[in-house]
Image: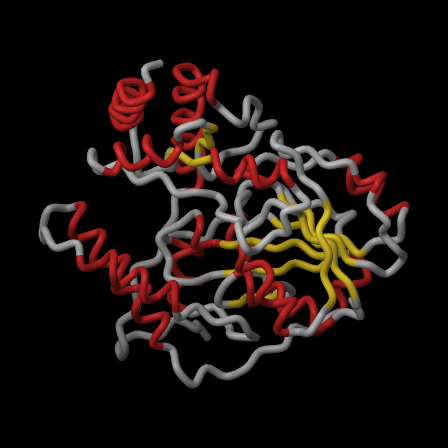
Length: 340
């Protein structure tokens, strides 16, 4: 008997589910509201007592470990995003969070060094959706909403023996934060389509961000559906790479990254001495580069290279929403303001 129902509640139109979606949405994975909740889930299914975090990171990474009352320490990341794990006093059983910055995959040799020290490896691909998870890691984290127009979505994949875990969830009691996220996405879409000239969606987005939970909150069915059948991954990849390469051809002298190592970027990070002045000038032209990341008051001052990078970096958007004309406009404004 066919399982297809004729009549009743209408669902969204679905396209065939891609192989990539099937891998991400596998029931073997933890499907959570955001990446910080996915990280918190790791603390609940493992015996981690101490975690090493990079000195260049988003403050929200701290939240799950603070919520779990875990001890954490920092290891140094220099101004070129390089790390020397040989010098870090990692003990057997310590967890180490390794970030693939801006979409660039981490060299497999680094994972080998960490394994030789007896570390539990947490691979953070929040900025690197298109990087293939490494099975040598114990856990891999994704943040879907950093890449796609979905209101929520954090995924944790466990590897090896860790794959035996059943992921814990809590029932949702208040989902207003998800509603605000969806309202912001819808408002931005209407604005882009020139159906509505209001920018209220931005304040709604800020409200949604301020309400983001850290806990065992499940990913919404809406985001799962969008990921399963509404995203053209191939087209998104192609545009990201094309836009990145164009920006690099024009801005090589201020680019932080010169080799994507076969992956697709989350953005195009640049380093400028007069970052704040130039960023304010870009705002005047409706160009809004985020800062990844502000770490004052988050990371101790004993990591000067990370703080120096934090004070000079900003990320030019180059994702699949934009074409080369958008990139050319951004470069033109930037070169005028920078005098390059």
